Every structure is written in structure tokens, then in C-alpha cells.
Amino acid sequence: MSRRTFEVTYGGEKTKVAIPERNLDAVMTIRNQPALPNLKEAVREAVEEPVGGAKLSELLRSGVKVGLMTIDRVPGAIKQMNRAVLDVLNEADVENRDITLFYAAGTHLGRNPGPVGDERLGSGIADQVRVVPHNAYAASGWAYLGVTRRGTPVWVNDKVAKADVRIGIGEVAPHWIAGFMGGSKIILPGVAAWDTIWRNHMMALSPEPFMGKTEGNPIRDDMSEAAALAGLDMKIDCLINENQDVVQVMAGDFDKEWRAIIPYSREIWCPKIPGLLDILVYAPGSGREENLRSALYPSVMAADLATEKEGIIIVLASCIAHKGAVDPLGTLKYTLEELARQLLHRESHDPLVYGLRRSLERKRVYVAAEGLSKEDVEKASLAYVASTLDEALGKAFEELGGDARVGMMLQEGQIMRHMPVVE
Image 1: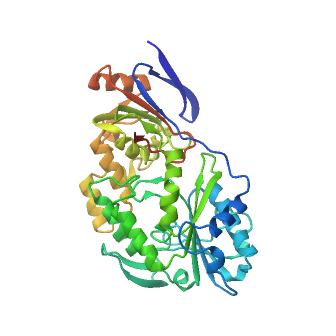
Image 2 (image 1 turned 135 degrees about the vertical axis):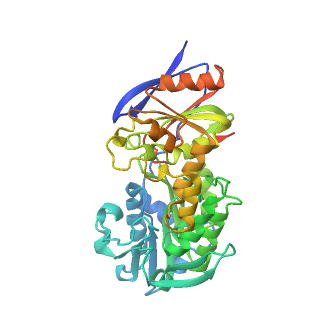
Image 3 (image 1 turned 135 degrees about the horizontal axis):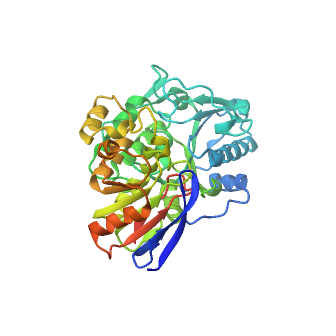
């Protein structure tokens, strides 16, 4: 039987796996694009030719206080973006003393965020302008802006609210609840209070998955209302390749530019498949396959959307870091009911785990791993654990038949953004 071979990372090393050619229906990889040759020029052009909203030159005036917000994801790309945007502001005669850079990390910095330096912002930036690491859990320092139509009270960092001009920097790629990253997300959760973030993220308990969904997505619509209440004047969003090089930039109205750049993001991160698959195999890639939760999130959620109702997802993850860990499963050990109760009572702020658990219970998930116990399998709602891909595929073919259609989703270097879609 003819087989097609793929190179993957397993156990921290490169290895080869094979899938029967007659069953292989799709190979899903990203469409890499070259880095922009001059990022600063691309930013300057984007802010002066915005997609909706005012030009940067129309927003600025002498002595204007700029609240510049930046994200805590893909630091390789965002450090480049931070530098380019600051250079453009300086060349527009905005002085460094009039710029405050907010590290808009939502809840990611925890309750006691420390200083944020060059490793996250870019060389010399923390010495150039005032940097404020956002603390979503702070007891004070909030501006109350009203309530969205979905009942989310909106508190944002009062220093952001007091700025004369509010500008956000972000990146657009598929996101498991917001549809796509970027746009209004810089405000909520970026610089919002924990109460606001919690109320918005509770909508993730909906039975409907929102990954890649831009229309009729209540979480995104709520975020956009919050950004409007906050007076977000301009959003600058970029697209990146697998090396975190910036390949495209758009700016303007936070909703209009976000919607305008999404089709280009889909070209990179959303390979098309001819139909829902019976079996989807994916390799999480270096840095993620050694830990069960990292291996499953968020790829199993994307795989869920790309497989038939009775389909099987096979994950090539050694889970070698699982062995000897104090609490190797972490929150994956809880049932959907337990996770929902934790979220309701604010014992957890991570609806991500709820979404992951929902996909694990919707689809049969096999893991080709070393050392997962029977108890681990049951608690994590895994359907089967094999020692090799051949064993996992053999079991899947037993379940679905020898003609089952298989897709291979290669994750290496793709930083959790891969989302196949049916043509």
C-alpha cells in the first residue's frame, strides 16, 4: 500500500510518520508569505490611508496625549510593530513624554504584574516612553463607561480613558471565542477590568463554537461595543507568517479594518478542505507536543470543526512532560458541569478549558503518546491512547472503515493559529 510520509516533532525530536495515500483527502498547511520589506513605511501608509475612521494626521495635534495599547502575543512580530508605530508617531511630532504604552494583556499578567521590558516590548522602548502593564484585578483605577446591550458593564483602565487619542496595536488570526484576534479585542479584554472580562467571557458557555465566526458572534459584538464606549480612535492590525515576520498591515476604524483584513488572514491560516473529514491527524509541533493540554489546545477545537459528527481526531503528542508532573491534567480533569460551575462562581476565569473540554466530549480524540495512564485517559475524556500513529490509525479504521477519509494538519511553527475550513 502506497503511503505518504510527513516529518513531525515527537518527543522533542524530528521523526517521520506515514498515512495511506488512498485515504489521504487533505494536507493542511499554512500559506506562508514574505515579510514586508519596510515595516515603518507600511505602518505610515496604513495610518494615512485608513479603512474607515480618521487619518492619524487628523487625530494628532500639538501636545496631544496618546494612549498606545499593545498586545502580549507573538512578541517577535509585536516588538517590530511597537517600534514602527512609535517611530511614525515621533515623525508626526508626537513627543515621547506624551505617549503612554499600555501592555494590554487582559488577565494574562495575573494579579501582581511586574515591569514589562525589552523582551516583550522591543529594544529600548521601556526607556523611551512610559509603560503601564495592565492589571485587570486592580482594586481601583477604573473608568466606568456604561453597559453593553448584552449586559456587560464596561470598566477600562482610567489612564486609557483619560488619553486624548487611543490607538491599539494587534494581530489578526483565528481565535477560539472572538472569531479572529485583533480589532476591538485590544480594549476588551486588553485593558478592561476583571469583572468586565468575566461577564464577556461567560458567553463562551454557549453550546455554539465561535472559532472563526465573525457574524452573529455575541462575544465579538460585545467586545466591539466596549471598544466604542472606550473611544478607540484607531486600530493598527498586522498579519504575520510562521516566523513572526509582519507580512501585512491595516489601520483605521477598529471594526472596519478588522473585517477588511480577515480575508487575508484566512488566506494564511485557514486552508480549505473538500469536505468534513472522517479522521483528522495533527502534530502540535515543537514546544507543544510534550504537554497534553498544550497539545490539545486550541488545535483540537479547530479539528472538531473540520471533522464529521462521528469523526476521530488523532493527536501526535509524546506528552513526555506529563510524566512526574504534580498535577499533569490540571483543569482538564474537571467535567463540563464542574467547569461551568467554577466559571459561574468565579473560581476560574478560563473559559478556554470549557471550550476544550466541550470538543473532547463532542469528538473521539486519540492521542499517540507515551506514558498516559488509564486514569489520565478517562479524566481527560480521551477515547484512546496509542503508542504510535500506525496503531491509532489502525484503531480509527476499525471504527470508521477502511475507506475513511483522512486529513493531515501540520502545526510546526504555526503558533496555534491553524483553522482548516470546508470549501
